[in-house]
Amino acid sequence: MNHAPLLATHLIGALLLGAAVVALWIADARIRRAHDCGTIARAGRRAGWVAQRVLMPGVALLAITGVWLVASYYGGWSFVRIPWLAGMAAIFVFQSAWARAVTHPHAARMRSLLAGTRDADPVTPALERARRKPLVRFGQQFEPALFVLAVALGLLRPMHWTSVVTGAIAAALVAAALAFYAARPPAFNSFSRASVEAEGSR
Image (cartoon, rainbow, N blue to C red):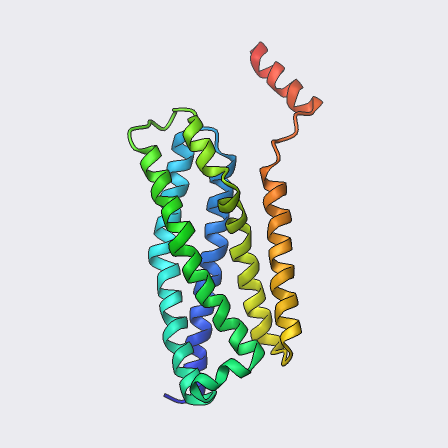
């Protein structure tokens, strides 16, 4: 295959992966803010659909075309001497490993905890503990940050490892800050209190 169509297919894979990352991040945010089991279950089902229909095809296209491009145009294993390309490959491998080690087991745990619950049931303490795990919260923010870093490496193509390492550290710090912010309980201000009291008076 010529370079142009191979690169175009690779970009399609990247677009699919980016769309999946955004959709999954939104689903995670809904799960994090949900007050009942039905909302969590629906968001989980949407996340499962996105993973099967968008994420997996995107990952497959990226893996196949990425290996093909490296083998055909970047000297095979010599790509490890190219910082931006090696950085993109490392991010891809890391995200795949993270999904197997953290994301998939967490999703399975949530499905197990939701089994037998009704839509109107409030969030159980076990569900609350599962969705608030620090490693899970960090991963929910870190994966989008890593995707942005991979795109930046592909566009800017830095030829110094310092740039790649600095970008990875920045992504981790941003993800940690966002995870900490997302873990804060919602503010209970006078407006929300007035709304609750008005609702109760009805």
